[in-house]
Length: 118
Image 1 (cartoon, helix red, strand yellow):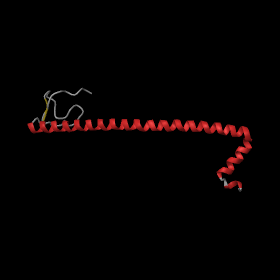
Image 2 (cartoon, helix red, strand yellow):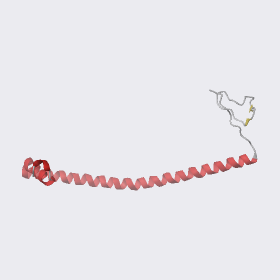
Image 3 (tube, one colour):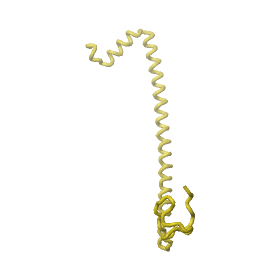
Image 4 (tube, one colour):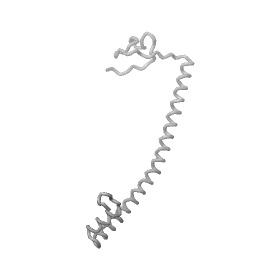
């Protein structure tokens, strides 16, 4: 595939003498170089630039919000880890004093398990 040629596209072909259809058989867009067309293109470019800037601002706001949320999540995960460690320690102490059968029996009674008939 050959690289695209620079230069304005004319109705009957391009400045290099090629037809209205390029080497790939695709129709070439006809670009009018009138003042009104140039003004319209500038307006399109201006709107596209505004849209790009708006999207950049939205992305920046989302990154900041994500930062705030991730900080809260990390703190909650750390707190959960501390509570899990405390619970594991308490369970170990309970098993040491009452034995696994006593702790299991107490856990079943506390859970209100209906299958045991209690």
